[in-house]
Image 1 (cartoon, helix red, strand yellow):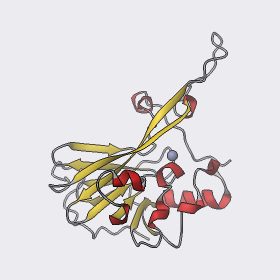
Image 2: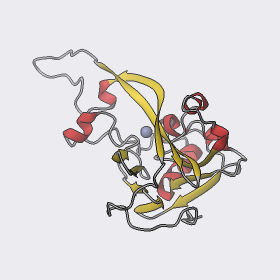
Image 3: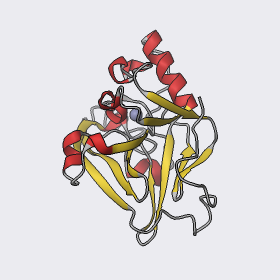
Image 4: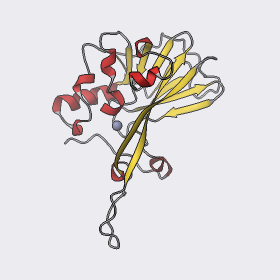
Length: 224
Ligand SMILES: [Zn+2]
């Protein structure tokens, strides 16, 4: 399978400032709640013992869970990662009106909810490496169980995979293959006319320190 680029004409590559979403595009940030866990899951060296502090406090950290919904003139609703029906409702829209889903990576906390799109014909855009890794993980029960079969319907979902390192999916919306947290993770660049460029990083950076200190995030590629 290969992603088609026919939905909206491609006019220019992402690096050119004129490559912007059309006037009238709206991007909603969906608040999906918070996740709390031991800080050492996200930050290298966090909570590690030292000679002078052999029993450090196990600090915990709350992470905001966000996804986004884009109202794209002439096409309709584009959902980046799955969100929840209630979060979409809060924007004045309905999950039934979503026309395309873009997945950064297929872990359960980013792709759980894809079951809402089974047998709808809505295209699910995901990098080929991510799709293969998720299928392997589910089939072998490897990778700590962070991919689950109930939302990974092979028959019922309209998977649209792509293998390019960069894909201009719509004018002003570009996906960048950024392996690290998972082999097929894609970040999404959205160039808005007035508000500028937004980069949706999926789990490439769980906390700001991953980016600022150049520390890699938790890597989900090991066999368990
Ligand atoms: Zn993840």
